[in-house]
Length: 375
Image 1 (cartoon, rainbow, N blue to C red):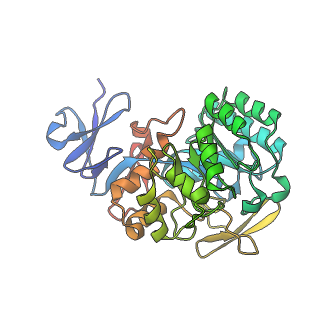
Image 2 (image 1 turned 45 degrees about the vertical axis):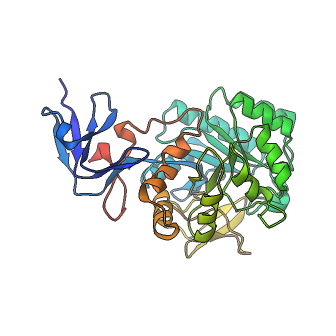
Image 3 (image 1 turned 60 degrees about the vertical axis):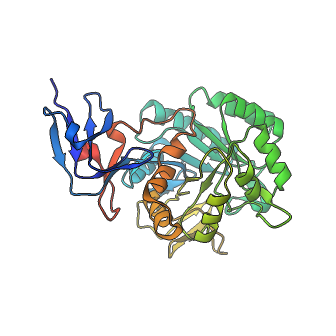
């Protein structure tokens, strides 16, 4: 009979709280459970860790690239495997490869590639995020305005067909280029519709959420802002009871004070979750790359077009967690939940974050993640 393993000596994040004086017990089937130190079976092999934290690996719903490559540049299996390896090295257990606004042919290629990756169990790939092309030109950010267009019937059909092979399909769109009826059709079928890159007013955003959109893409960025008499998309995303806003917590996209305000204002039943919006530089040392034939520069923690427009983020999930703790002032367990169980809970087909293959160990300084099954 195979002996159980138990990892002791570290605090354990169980998805909601940090447990002390516990060990992580690994069952024969790979499932894990936090148990009091005194309850470790005598037949277990005990691995003693030098402090730190055991936590589920990160769940990132917005990953545009990594390892020096962009999904948009070549949406094929080789590119996706490179991105997956880079983010696994950064502690990500599950992610949605994200295709930024591009041609319909590129969207079709991305869909086929992700379906193949899921079938072949490329580590970490659990679905697809299509961020565009049905956005607002006024709030396009670094997206190519020439490729932005309204959603048509064949686009809806493509997305509905995609659900047969990709259960976690996340689509960012703007009410300027998607109808409320289309939102309802897609969301009813199981597509995770998110409102973003939009200049819509509060009332329009609330109607989109009432129609079935359930998320807001990178809160505060590329959307109509909140003011005293015009709450905009920001206000609607925080005011609607059913919305989960994503957040880029790097201190560049959103100031820490505004993050604190958003956390206090959020009325939704779903908590704000963290995304990296990572681009090609993630897990690499490159200093520039291209997106839709435009050069993106990496300087001082920022990724920008030549005119200074932010183009994704130079951010890891662990850096985002540190920012939430050190600058926003959140408890560590809350920040960890925003990077793990909260985004996982939004998915149609959530990854199993209790399996030993999905668990990481962080030292006391929240340093380089190490996979528990590789210790």
